[in-house]
Length: 139
Image (cartoon, rainbow, N blue to C red):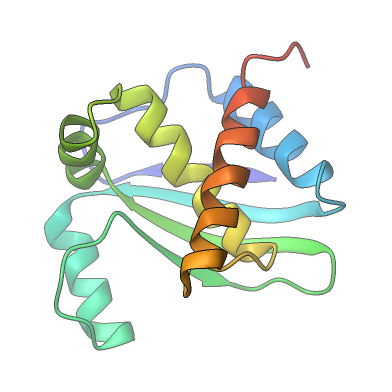
């Protein structure tokens, strides 16, 4: 089950398309979704979570809380819509593309992918691109 929670004015269009895409992204890695909660929020909201739970005092685009068990994906993914907008401009990509990148980035973390080294980051970026392309495939 995938749930979408909105703490900003932002709303996903066609949630079912995102459900199919995220599910397929997990299935291609041999994982099944138990429960994913996407929480779309502001920079201020996510900064507070970063400070309170991770003791980090900086803005970020996503924070993922991992409840995975084996190949069963479960977690809470907090996404700052403010960061998505700013990053899209900075990286000269569409808001839609950046949103998908961040949404799947969190799921990839839940499936064990990391971005703690240059090599791991390169693998993560390749996986993000691979999964973004799945969004356009007929389900």
